[in-house]
Length: 624
Image (cartoon, rainbow, N blue to C red):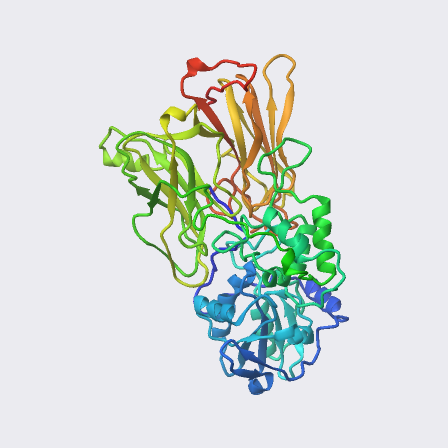
């Protein structure tokens, strides 16, 4: 199972010190069009006056210090923007591919929310050697006309801007976060520098920089009806802090005013574009216990606050601090933590295949697990975790065990950006037989530097006497589809027939980067063929893998058929599409596809007890 994240953890597909160039796919007409579009650009050709900034160590750097360089790359960066995290090491690799006497890189941080200590930590983590300069009051960003991170400006010998925009086209930043494409894409920055060094005009001098808005400090309006202390802090506690706090999956914390105000304009943008909060169910169908949707009134509070300069207000109006478990999202600390048997090493670049790591939890008797949470040891590189249970086997045939390594596994728990620990109804739990082993499916994504990880799973046990239903995860899936190249609206369907009355409490649609929409429709048995939409996701977002927990578990009568319908966009209009020229089939990696409609169900402990109590919902029996 492949998942995505708001915190970008994507492998850099570098080979050696210099990124290999792909033959430019732009035709002569496209190049001429780009030049014509740039002709009236207010930034292109601007001559940059000398400026000086201090780096995070306090050393002063001036643009004029590099007067002997033919080309200066000015790279606007951030420490927490997902794409900026990826491109910090990439810019280092690009710079190393040119002679230091010809080209220099100056990184500039203009974010009000990024401190000097954060810049120092970022530089150490990614082993960056180029200067990282702090632009207080965003004066240099204004001088260049910089708006986002990451964004680069290429200056010629006269210090005129000859190229600005993205670093390359491999990563996108659309409905969610950046996504890696498996093949090399147009290396815009490298091409621009090479053309300037060769005495040629830059063929494509302007590209769109996709990333995070620079956090500019603004003058707050003192009479604003909306302040951080009165309204915004409370809204954030309700809607954001599950993810946006230290050690959680979001790329930055939202626990302090200074941090939140620096991200103010970006917060307004992602709310306006419905990228945040990450909830994608159509409100016309189904009621969900974990719905995280902003009301129109809440959205307007955010817009008003940002328009008025993100005022702090009176700190006396702040709410009490919301408390969370320090290490786990579970309501209490786990009874048992099972970790990977050893530290896993992750290479700095390239693609990491899935790792299947078997662990013995040491169960000498049957265990009932009411709650389970997968915990990444290194969130920077853990793309997803799925923990399966391998039931005890009688055979000692090693060859047979190897051939069945991925068969017969039972889903227990998973982690991916956006996924919270699954919380079944009271009295429902997973049964793990004595002698079972856990199989960790680990997917790592390199970040440009060598990393290590030792992830784990935390378990909360239940007393067997309190258990009424055994939790089982099943699915409607299609493994045999083919998505044609350039096809923008390809339909794939899967069906599942319920052989017994079944109680369903959660739905989890899963696709990859070409996923467009997903719908669960239940057709009830009988001649009337009545049907109901259980879940409709009109705009699937690969980066946030949501489970949709029903407000009340639903009885699915025996003989009902679940129809899952998915649509895929394999066209160039899909900004996350790795390659619209490829026919796409089932596969593990993000540039391949999956079509799975997971269903979390409950099976009664004693099937003979299945009956209807008018005061309670009927207990279920198993599906397929």
